[in-house]
Amino acid sequence: MSDTIAVASSEVRIRNLHKVFGGREVLSGIDLDIPAGSVTAIIGPSGSGKSTLLRCINHLERPDSGYVEVGGEVIGYRPEKGRLRERSSRDIARQRASIGMVFQQFNLFGHRTAAQNIAEGQLAAGVPAAAARARAGELLKRVGLAGREGAYPSELSGGQQQRVAIARALARDPRLILFDEPTSALDPELVGEVLAVIKQLATTGITMAIVTHEIGFAREVADQLVFLDGGQIVDRGAPADVLDNTDNERARAFVAAVL
Amino acid sequence: MSQVLADRVSATPNEQPSESATDGLVGARLVTRRRPARWVAAALALVLAAMLVNTLITNPRFEWGVVGDYLGSSAILRGLVLTLWLTAAVMVSGYVLGIGLAALRLSDNAILRTASFGFVWLVRSVPPLVQLLFWFEIASLYPRLSFGIPFGPEFVSFQTAHLFSALAAAYVALTIDAAAFASEIIRGGLLSVDHGQTEAASSIGLSRWRTFRRVVLPQAMPSIIPASGNMLIGMLKATSLVSVIAVQDLLGASELIYNDNFKIIPLLLVATIWYLVLTTLLSIGQFLLERHFARGKRRGPTRSLPTVWRDSLSLLPHRRVAKAGGAA
Image 1: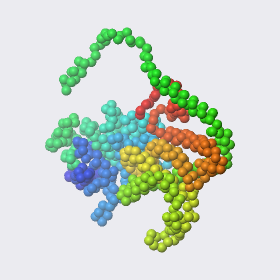
Image 2: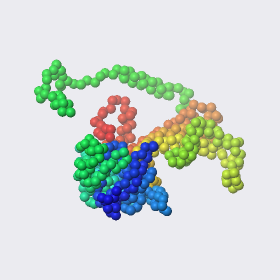
Image 3: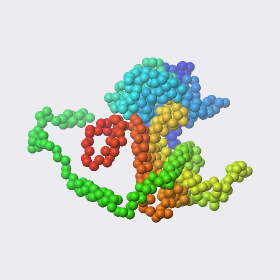
Image 4: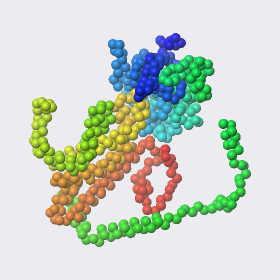
């Protein structure tokens, strides 16, 4: 599997990942490498396990077998005498801090302002309030929301909320950032502003994994495209190869339907 | 597809408006529908209110003079202080226990979950007065209480009769009652917070405790506060049950006086007036708390107490200033 991508430079290594929900296998043996500094887009029909795969990467879902490794460390488990023993919640929190995540429904803390949302993770890490506040302002500027520190999520549009969520995911300088259908809950005219921020982010060299339905965006930004169906990776490679010349019947049908 | 589009294009209105018989109504004044039944109902309500005021003033058996004499008397004030103190103590310890019970109920451990459920079921099923009497009579059930290893040696032991005065029995019984109800209120509030909030907190590396304290609990408050306010007011009144076991609370103190001088109605009015004053103050406090925890929930300026008062109690049709924001 790792013939096309050098394992040594992989930021994320997923091996034989299985996940079962209520007797139904949602992920059946995923093997995937995401090279450091690259962008991987994950596409596929709904129910194919895309989000579950992403959520296993930062241990929001606990795999039933197999494992995920980020930056050389197995997530959620500690290798011990040939076994993987689940880590303490403190240890898992530490691992998650280095993996940012952006959700479909934004999930901003509704009772806190934009700046407070962004600063929360840093405050938890013991960063002084003033420094965390300054960093929040800086990040807001970066996502095009300079001066909106005091705005509550309910006072922001969906696109603005998602941009604050991206800033929040960046606040602890993650080595990897996960996007779970970041534009699916947005009104069509707001999709562009969020994609622009993600696109800009892709140029900074941070490793990214994006579950998306925006095929055009995936083609433009992704270094690697993964097509998931029925809990398995059906096809993967450079976006143009997968989208235009896939050998796989299911992938071809899906691409034809969404384009 | 293209057929639908063509239909839509042909359905767009012409540039030239068509003529109609209603053309003359363009500038007509809009007249609101008459509502005579409203006026009748309002008049009836006013008559009933006038009758109430009249009887309060003219019926000599209210003995307002006696009410005035006892309203500030030291025995009544002592009862009032005990009522306040007991309510506060019961609510604080009830909520501490209630948070624990809610945590057990939401835990992953099935045994603890069931235990919490069983406790709440039992306490909610038995009337508080019956519980109160049980705790008052506990000495006849367990004359001696001891601490030690279960089924093993004892370290300390007490005579229950000395331990449980009437006031202690009242405190314990009401606390247990409050804990059961508080746990349900807290559990409901915590469950009302979207799970995505917890996931987002986890994703930025917040610990479970910090997630609870900084993310979940503050957002559970808007649904916990109103229910807790109602419970506090209910508990303030429920403390009057303790007069049954001869505790001198506000009602107990009033009873003691009227048992002596037979001025039953005036002394019940004294207690009533104090309960009215207390619940009114608590309601105002509840309003201010609710407004505080509505942060980030609503657009537009926060409404002051007099505004809310006027909006909910206005007798005349109040002016509807364009409501900015609306449903967020």
